[in-house]
Image (cartoon, rainbow, N blue to C red; front, side, top):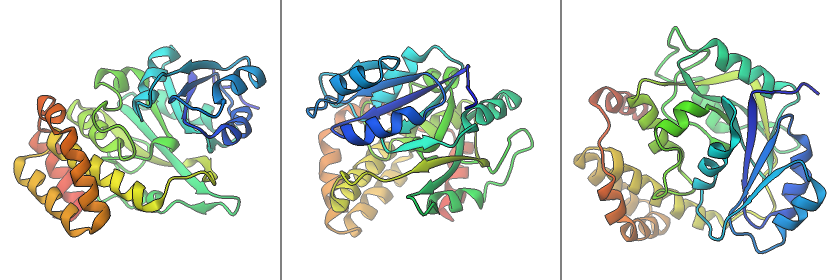
Length: 281
């Protein structure tokens, strides 16, 4: 086992105790486990089985904001995110940290993600590997304007400086707003195929239709937070066209609309231009 002394693994979970207990021993760095108000005994089980893990129990489910709470506690230059059903390949936490040190503008490193025991490449990684943004000379791989949180390492300083994951957007789909803000601040995001994360999706996953609705909610709220009004309208219209999950996501986004409007700060035109390129517009 290759230790990664300047990395902390931040794991967030809710009501998936067995997955959590199986994955925690695989992490080759100190672990901060942030529990999103589980009711299945996850907190007590982790404390009993893994006394070396820092456990932060929350009294309510704050979604991806739990990762920000964990990063604030970490105290290391880099934080690697993992879910209760994912882990970094042996030696790759240290390898990713070395890559981060060698590229000081890199704020987010997205690893190659292999899914399930059969190790299928995650389709998102295939897209990232072919990013139309190309590879900037001071980054270690194709440039990104988004990432997959369970397969990413972040530079703690940069992550926290832009506020971490959003308390309005929550989960899933939390990565886009953060990516826009990091790019606006001059940081780089890159896909690095040389490091690997394993993701064995839990059998206790949410209903796919409910997840699609939650993703549409995040898209709409992110648009309100960071996109021009014409793009807000475009995203809302796309949600309506997406059928029941899109319309449900739009309705749910309306509940948090006042919070999003108060935090609204449209991204710079240079960042928006890169986003349009990724969308093929």
